[in-house]
Image (cartoon, rainbow, N blue to C red; front, top):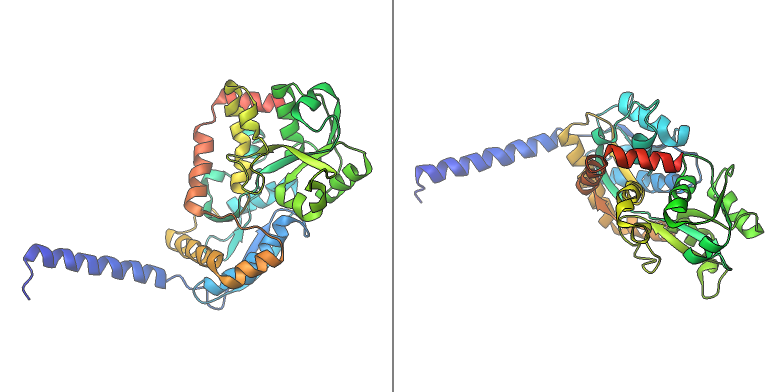
Length: 338
């Protein structure tokens, strides 16, 4: 069969292109290597559980099937991990990490002492998008109107935490009567404090609530969610109002800063400077893992929800959060939460 010269040239170009792509991916080989998955918090929390899940399964889908380990690097609410990822971690794919969900908020509102830039990390993917839920003990104050009429005590680990920043933000925007109580070391302590009546409410990811106190949310149960924070409603609790829908239109850009907490959720990222072919290999392995029956079965058994998002989408959301946050919005958010 005779091909016109132009067709032959195009056909040859396509063959060369696919050969180059194939060779580029063939060069990414983790055989005999160890890939470390780092978290910025202590063991026993949801970051640790997701990291363990990733470490048990991701290696099966990476070229060469490397050994996978989990490492805890706690400090400064995850900032120590992020600073290390920006300057010390290897960018050959053998060191990856779960970015703290407050990463963007921290960089925008409290940049002192930070050496990382969230815009420069390479995002592999999100396993679960986790909105933050403000839950209150049932009673007269367990509603927006109730918190406008009754003083309520809301527990947190302290300034810089979502449990502090979101009520501090929502209080003046919604005219709520809130007293913030800090000093709790863990979500477990805060939930126990609600149980004992020390505080009226606190804020956690919906999965934390459902894992620790599922009976609370049955009909006429002990507690009820009153507000959720995220870009869209959590599919497991779609009737709980979003903070962005409760505030005045002019205040929505400030609230939108905090929507990135849910978007980041429990994700995986690679350090600055990770080459494109290594990133493509990590992303491909992550997507394959999410569809794997063994992975899905263990996630379900461990009660670790999968509400996935691609690394490309996560990267776009983070870049958008920076590009749409004006100096005035950042200044106002800082004033309200510090």
